[in-house]
Amino acid sequence: MSMMSNNTASSSQYDVPGAQCEESAAPSSIGRADLLALGAIVVLWGLMAIVVNPVGDFPLNDDWAYGLPVKWLVETGRLRLTDWGAMTLVTQVFWGALFASIAGFSFTVLRISTLVIAAVGLAASYLVGREVGLPRWLAMVVAGLFIVNPIFISAAHTFLTDVPFWSLTMLAVFLLLRGVRRGHAVSYWAGWATILAATLVRQLGLAIPIGLVIALALKDGFSRSWLVRAVVPTVALFAVVVAYSKVVQATIGLSASYAHTQNSLGLVFIDLIHLRLGALKPFLSGLGCGLMHLGWWMLPLLVLLPSFPGAGERPGKVVLAPLIVVGSAAVVTALLWATGRLMPVGSPGCILVDLGTGPRTLGGETPHAPVLLWVAVTAVSTFGAALLVLALASIARRSFAHLLSTRNHRPLWLSAFLIIVGAVYCVPFGYYGPWFDRYLLLEMSLLGLLIAGETTRSAGRGLRPSAPRLAAAAALALVYLGFGVISTHDYLAWNRSRWEACRSLMKPGDIAPTDISGGFEFDKYFSWQNRPGGTYGNGVGAPGMHPFGSEVGSRPRFVLAFSESPGFTLVRRSPVDRWMFLSPGQVVILGPNPH
Image 1: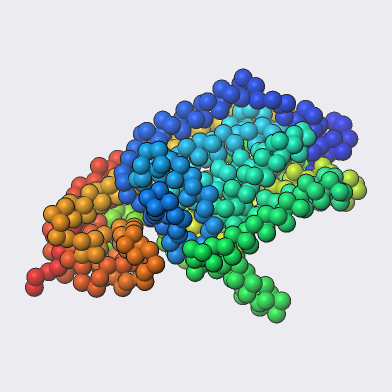
Image 2 (image 1 turned 90 degrees about the vertical axis):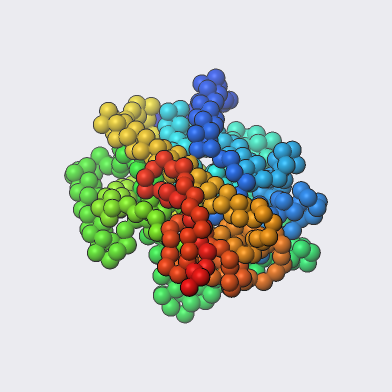
């Protein structure tokens, strides 16, 4: 993005979004007002967690596969992994083990560990905003996108890898930028250490050094310092990841799905060389899903700021751009409605479901939101996606104009960093197989910083949102926050009822976990706890059971579901302490039909 200005100093002074010069773009130290902002973020986050109530010793979604290695490490002192995940994971295992070694192993403790590191990530997100020159209130808004985001709130109440990876990544970005811009060697190399920690949660942490190598080449040229500070550490980090896979494979065994994404990308590359353009279909599908969700969840920021930085530079653009946004949103919404592809979009297992958060991994019927509600959500999502695309197009146009007008590319280094990291990060998800909405957390941060920074640069210190924009953004944020807190509470509540029902069955002692089809998490957890190297079973559940399936025997004595099903006898009904009437209201225990 271009850092040129008509009424300030020369373009060589602009190194960051929103900056007038590198020395004055961001505070030289964290001041009292920043500490108050950070305190407000942490307190608000803690209060939200208390309202949601994270208590409950049971896994959620895929986190049984990440919690069991913590359990084994704490109990035996040995690192063992399941064969489920495709990520490096080891940092997260030791993070969870740190908490479990103090408070004892339970999924409640693991959820608390995620909530703690989420608070670190939220604070780091604010500090990154300040470091790139955003005014204090706007840095709070960029961080606040996650405080009110239902996807983030729900994921933070699990032991999934998404929030810890995002938090470590944001902390690494803050330390690296602070080190680069201020010459703080300690911050810079601490940033590299944090990159290593993030990459040992997920391999996609490698996107950060790739972006940094290119960005610092723009900033400082192909110098010896660039080689030492960027290229050598990047090569070393790649070597660590390769060595990790070799060591794990030779010792405790590597997950069969670990290299799935790399292999898929290799096959796609071969297809594209042979001009088989159909290989782009999974990526384009994932891109469409991503734009829909980004448009929805970033809308508070997009409506708060002038939608098209620099729009006034072209006569008529102020009028034309809104017409393009509204028209394209209306057309896309109509097409999606006609083809039955309304929000929520993505693979089974996404956090946003109809209607709530957290995948419903039991069979049976649950309440559904009216179709018109999802039509409205889809319309808002496409409107936000159109705003996002046009804002990025405006940034791209200004960047190319800068490239063509001068040989000084130094002002583009930070924008290049944000864009390249985002591009490298998102490409593999198009070819992983399933596409999950929680993958977008880092992308949302990078785009938020990019757009907020360019808007700040264009408007200068006088940037203040109008009252209508402020009211619209605040209303959206309150809706998101309320939905996120209530739906996450209900997600934990019906899982709490599910596990209480399962434990009540096993309490007499004559019913084993393998006699119960308790849903995806229950079946996987007990299967891998007893047979960490075992084979998958072929489960049978109630009609309409979630496609994740089961790992119990072929004739379970009991099946858990959300509702009664033909061919099964109702054994017990457990009510759910739900707050939203569209959340599951019960969990039932079903037995075989004697007839």
